[in-house]
Image (cartoon, rainbow, N blue to C red; front, side, top):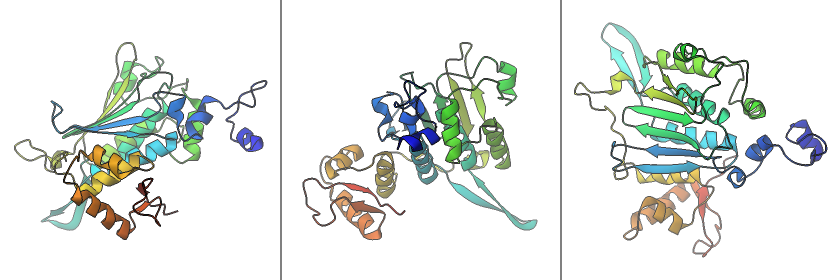
Length: 301
């Protein structure tokens, strides 16, 4: 095991060569938040500026798993695409409210460059007309404000070098300062507005805002595909989202998270249907009514 850890370069230097470095704890540990309070992604769906109908999710676990689950949630519950046909050509255009590649680059960038000694988690906020991804701190001061506004985020100083290496091994990052350019290229390729990059004079945060494609906005300024809220988002998708954010849940935990306190027969029926379809599974399949019974996403590997 030590030989494997050494090959992954996740152990300290002598005399601490039997102790994992921070990147090792963040990637090869089921609960890195035990060591780093902010090692999580908080995702909030906010259909109303006042917070009415707000739904909050947390994604924990190894950093690469957090990224996979958060992006998977956005892919399943936020991103929508449409096909536009034209009278003068048989070729149709396919566009999305948000290009998935841009979302992936923004989320990976935030997790990669975050300060894990800070108590602030990586935050993703989904509003009716935008997705906002924020991490702390902001860009290194060697990157000027003009560089930021010009999407030129190349730096000679790298934060979290080993985290970047491990993300690269997982195929989630390239470590060539390509994240922001890829994000911009993806937004422009989808005919979406350029991403908005923000920080402050102290470089205490970095915020990326991806605006919705204008085609998805009605003439009256309303969102073409309305933001899903707690009452109209499909029950199946809500259950899947909760299980993406949690390794397993008891029925009581699931009902509480869904906001059901009575008349929950539809939830039980949905869970049975999803088990039958193979989407999810019981942890104790031979004893369905066991007091220790839990449900989880089905392992398809």
